[in-house]
Length: 155
Image (cartoon, rainbow, N blue to C red; front, side, top):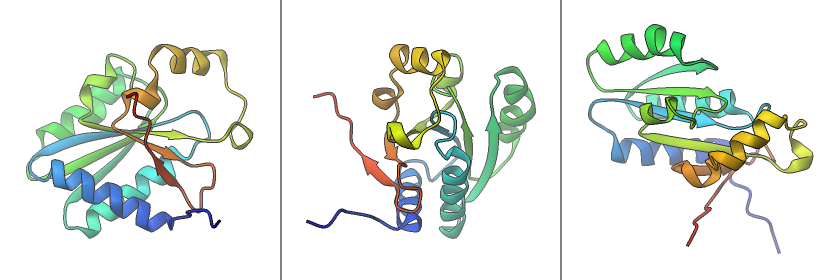
């Protein structure tokens, strides 16, 4: 049986279409979270390019901290005009107080053999925040050329 292996661009386009379907009007902030080395930046860049191709302004940012992000990135973005999507990549973005900023979030998972060694902090984050269940969407990036959306329903 053949394994489903979507093209990377198709996955990015699918996310862009879904995001714009729900957030076409206004200025919205999206998170792309995952463990170190999961490919957050590349995926966020790809989704931003797909959003731009659909005619909406996409702004990109990376963050690891709260204070500078709020004052240097979020405040100027929210003060802007016109429809736009700010796509932020980083680690532990679904942890309070950052979690409340995002209207849509993507958790990137990788196979244990495809990810660098998890730190104790990362394991604690995944145990307490449970980003796979908290995020709006999940993406398996074990094969970076063919990322696959996964569904982690708890029902």
